[in-house]
Image (cartoon, rainbow, N blue to C red; front, top):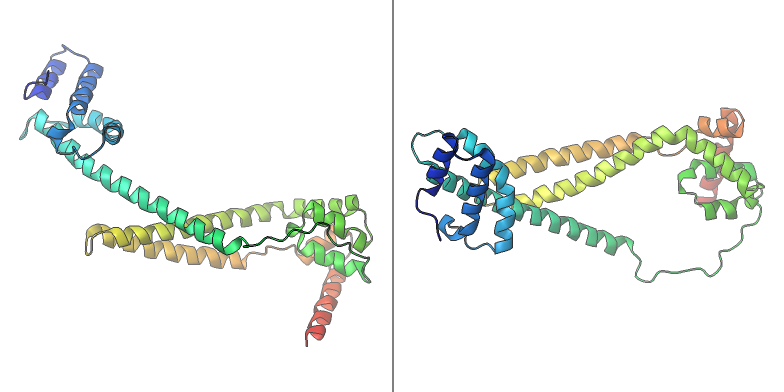
Length: 277
C-alpha cells in the first residue's frame, strides 16, 4: 500500500525519538523514494536508469539527513526537492559523459583511418643486408635511433656493421640503461599530451552542446582555453627534450672519445648533404 502523506516526517520523528536506528531510517527513505518515481516528476527514466540514479543519490541522502533543520519546509518536501535537483544534475552529468565518450571514440576512429593502411603489404622474406663500407659510422647512426630498433631489426643489421646479434643487442641494452630515466620522462609526457588533446576535444564538445550564453557554456569555454594553453606548453616542452641518444652517451657505450662520435656523424651529415644537392 502507498505510504501516507508526510511519511518521511514520521520516519524522522521516530529516528530522533530513538524508535528506529539510522540505518533503518536511511533504508526506509531509500525504499520510499524508489517505489514511485512519478510523484517526483522524473518518471521519464527507465526503471534501470532510475535505480542507477537512486544508488548515486544515496550518499547525498545520508548527508541531507544531517543537514536538515526544521525551518521552512518539512522533511518530506525537503527530501523531494533534494531528489529533483539531484536528478537534474545527474542527467546533465550523464549527458556530458556521453558527449565525452562519443568525442573520444570519434577521435580514435579518425586516428585509425589516418594511420591504418588500406592495403597492408607483407614481405614473405625480408631482404638481406650486406656489410657496409663504413660500419663504425652506421653503428653510430643506429645507436642514435636505438628506440626504433626491434629484435628483428637488430638481427638483420648486426652483420652489416660487423657484429653478432648478441654483441649489438648488448651495446643497445647498455645505451637504454643510460637513457632509462630520460626515456621514461619522455614517454610519460607523450601520454599526458595525448590525454590533454582528448581533454581539449571534450571541453569543446561540451561547450558546443551547452545552451548559448549560459554560465555552463562560458565555464566550458574558459576550461577549453586553459586546456589548449596547457597543451601548447606541453608540446613545446616535448620538442625541447632530447629523444635520441647524445653523442656522449654513444661514446660511453662504445668506449671511444666523444670527439670520435662527433666527427663520424658530422662526416655522415656532410656526405648526405652533398648527395642530395
